[in-house]
Length: 290
Image (cartoon, rainbow, N blue to C red; front, side, top):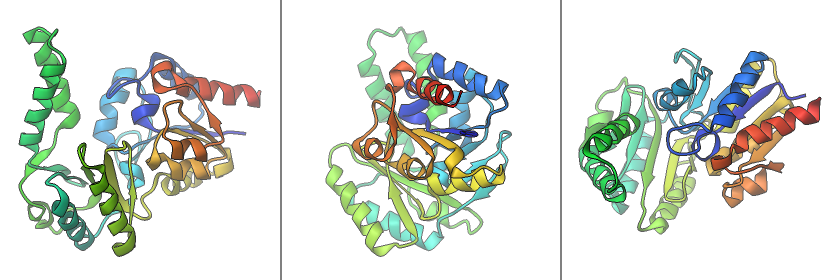
């Protein structure tokens, strides 16, 4: 009997970067009307997740930052697992040997190396890809981008780490031109930084957290607080950072658009995120239990 439903966000319950498929919204509302627990498990933090959940009138706990933090429904923190400042410093030094591109999720906000420059490039690319938009429409869309990708601009890691009270939850880096460099960073972390773990939410990025900050480990902790075993948990996702929870859940589902690792791990598969795959998978699960 499944008593807890857990879903990834990007590439899973979201049909694009910011909106939830209507069928998925209806299904989550149905679960909540029946008092069946539902939790989001995402690489995003509570603020970023809320930008997508609130328009859909979905209010639920969020296991954020790949399992580094459990946010309760009101955004208060139930549990957190952090990176040491020294491990973070070593990791950033390695990343910067390859490229000047990293982001850091912390207790005091989202920091990004040379963010203003990166965001300007993102806006320029968006304008090029959407020549059909009027100036007013473009302004609305850019405002959405600002909310979704907001970060604090820094020029060095020491601007973050000079604050001894700041808690580091996750470090991200991406490279669209040279994916080999990401594999080299991943290999370095696995060999030299045993307290850290590397996952990814897209093939062009890697995300680094403490080894105990994984979706599967944190979902199990959360289920325990509800008196629910992992055999009674449904989990659905599409990428490598979902694998740990797909392995542990009694009922695991890979999206139709999932990568091979997620496909190989999950017990079941569903439709893709553009066609309400989450709702279809949950409905199938509920039908099997009736």
